Image (cartoon, rainbow over all chains, first blue to last red; front, side, top):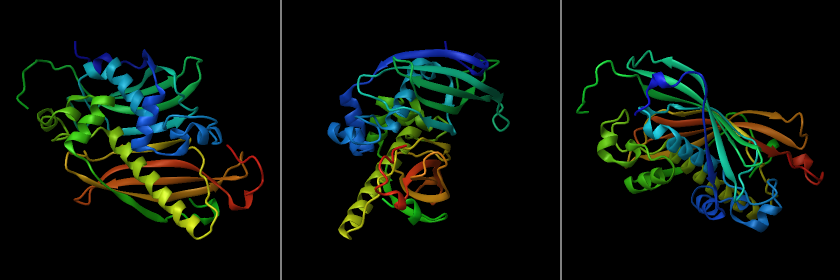
Amino acid sequence: MTLTFEDFPTGRFATFGPRHVTREEILAFAAEFDPQPMHLDEEAAKHSMLNGLAGSGWHLCAIMMRMMFDGFIGRTASLGSPGVNELRWLAPLRPGDDLMLDVDVTEARLSKSRPETGIVTFKGVARNAAGQILCEMVSPIIVSRRAPVVVEQAG
Amino acid sequence: MRFFEDTEVGERREIGSFTFTADGIKTFAGQFDPQRFHLDEVEGRNSLFGGLAASGWHVASVCMKLIVADAKQLARDAAARGETVAAWGPSPGFRELRWIKPVLAGDTISFASEVESRRASDSRPAWGILQIRNTGTNQRGELAFSYLATAFVPRRDAIGSGDAGP
């Protein structure tokens, strides 16, 4: 069943994971989007402030997006997101990490400009198997309201 | 990369342009954000985006790609002049990221950076903190993407002071 605005009351929504992150995917993302030594080179990374090979923060964002897609966005009447209010990178993503993602609904309100939709604001917190928090993000998503009458629309 | 003392509020730098192809959009989306409007032209046309649209995280990742390439070029130039190159610290995060206009297949986005504020770090005297507004503008001159990044930038007078890490 497709989730709609009404399915997102404020409070804890769900926890998703584990998502295993490999060294190979960290290197592949970094090579394409963030080719800095601490994301690409074991030896250089040892001497960096991250004290060892670490995934790009943007890679972690993309992985969190995929975890949310697999967890609920893929079966939500989502119309997209206007942005991210705040995102904090708190600890490095490491090769071999098994990520868990806690998702809370912090706010759910009806849209004034598109009355058939609501804006659901999520807080996502990614942590590793040791419980260390790697990233926190707060982001709104536009979600359709449950239609009073379901009609097939041609677009 | 420059030292904190060499930065100025209001200074703007063009970082480079990138054309998003349908294949590139679908490849990124297939891996990280497989929502229908990022994967299929027809679904994209029928969505709020009005066409096959890049994942917002794809746009942000491309912005980072161009920032890194530009920083490497700046570092090479500085090294060639015999200057000391500052190594910026890991970013603690960002605020106010806005996907303002959809980035559709075929769009060319030009990215730019502008220093919005600068202050010394209270807790880490060897460092300054910059707030940098990174933006992406499409080929029609419309602002499509924007976020306010936080960066730790080393102070020139702190060179050689030992452990400078945050």
